[in-house]
Length: 148
Image 1 (tube, helix red, strand yellow):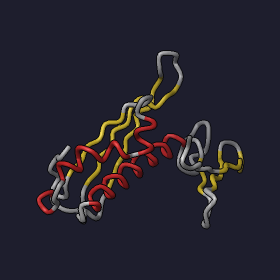
Image 2 (image 1 turned 90 degrees about the vertical axis):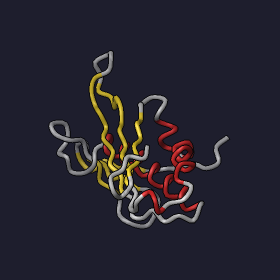
Image 3 (image 1 turned 90 degrees about the horizontal axis):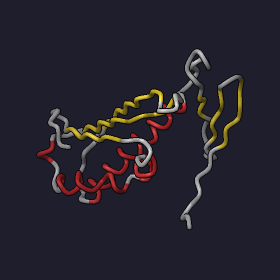
Image 4 (image 1 turned 45 degrees about the vertical axis):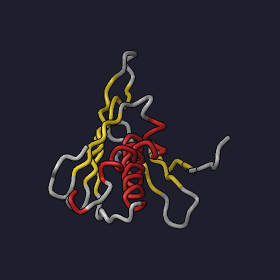
């Protein structure tokens, strides 16, 4: 039984460009396939998937730290999606690497080891896609120290 249903509405603009509406105030997001299929007039479906994974992990890390009344801001995140052909020769997202960077040095945050050990388990999007797409997560602090 689901606890909620999330919906988006896509409307074709032309060729492979679609306006993606989220049912909220504000403009739609224009998505497009990259050339040669599309014109690259917006983020591609792969980029949207990578953004969803990165956004969810960033929010999960922030929530977990704030639960302990910690202030890690400003967080930043980069996601690299490896796209290639599967065994059947079809294009697929083969893997993702996510790098989360805290806005402060690790020494300023309490309970960091506990947070780093658990925050990924609460990321709805990553936990949903990771059975099909391997997702590697790295966490660095503001000084560049590799924490996870």
